[in-house]
Amino acid sequence: MTGISFEELIAPFSSYAEGVDYIENEVAEGRLVPIKNSGLNGKRPALYQRYRKVKQKKDMNPLIARADRLIEPPLSAAFYKKHPAQFSKDESMILDLQRWLSIHENTPEEVSCNERSFEIFGQEKVLARHGERLCRNLGLDSKRLAYYQTYEPLAIYSRNDQPGPLLIVENLDPFISIRRLLITQSSILGFDLQSVAYGGGYRIESYFMDLLLFGFPALLHSIDPVYYWGDLDYEGIRIFESFAAKFPEVRIIPWLPGYKAMLEAKRKFDVEERAMPRYKEKQEPTTGEYFFSFFDPEFTNTVRDLWNKGQYIPQEILNLSHYRSC
Picture 1 (tube, helix red, strand yellow):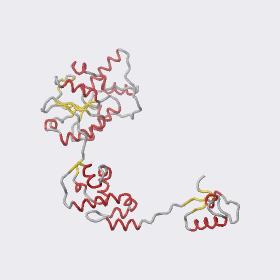
Picture 2 (cartoon, one colour):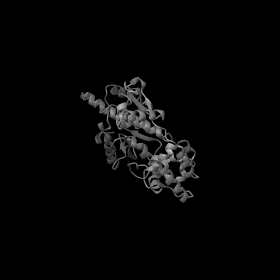
Picture 3 (tube, helix red, strand yellow):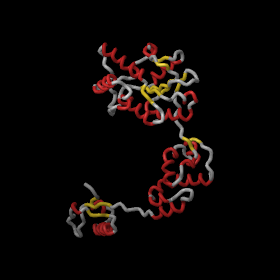
Picture 4 (cartoon, helix red, strand yellow):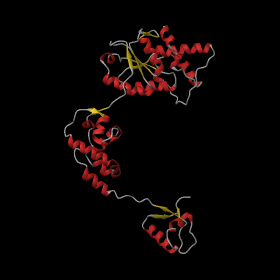
């Protein structure tokens, strides 16, 4: 039942009369509200059986005045004067930022996000978690803080320092196998390949950003197009389409030799009456419209039929013998 019983409210008092005085005063002050459908208690003077406590609104005027007093140019207090409760949460970060700006009147040399965060706040993760929001609230261009984002480097192997086709592989085992072969040969599944990189699922979006920022010239001249190869399941297709959408300025396309070889290997399993593995966990279906636009209807229908059975084809269906054979 909701609310608090009158017995609980008057328990601290030595007499019923004192308890009645307390409850009536709390009701008059708006701190208690009787729950009328709980009924009266049958005593004199009567009280309701249950009461609801009213949450008191905090006076925000002191916080508004504090924000107005403490936040100085180049920072603006306008947002926090309208949202004083948020100011109470952000105050220490705002003061740290304001202190740093007072020391660095001119924009300093760029350093990494976490390095700048520690310099300003004494903690390395604050800027990544709250920096953009703080700057927006305070009317400050985040470029004034002079920091750059860092990304995990892309694990990549190139046969030499010349431009050539770059293949990104979703899973580690096929990446290692192809890398081993590239040391001694250039053709993988009949495709002339210069470089292979490890995608690591959705992490490829961070890895690839590092390549765009810090890749050596030969690699940067090799990303039109970028070839991508992953599992033939919902998640693998979703990873590819998310990656391609993340970098619309780069032409990212499926590596057809890899996907077609997976389907050919699957046909050999069919002859042996061996089924493909079932999804290990529930995956959200996807139409794969962009992915399948690169393939003919026969390929598309075969893969979708397999999905309808709850099955998929992992990259590991292929191995060194397949990579060498074409």
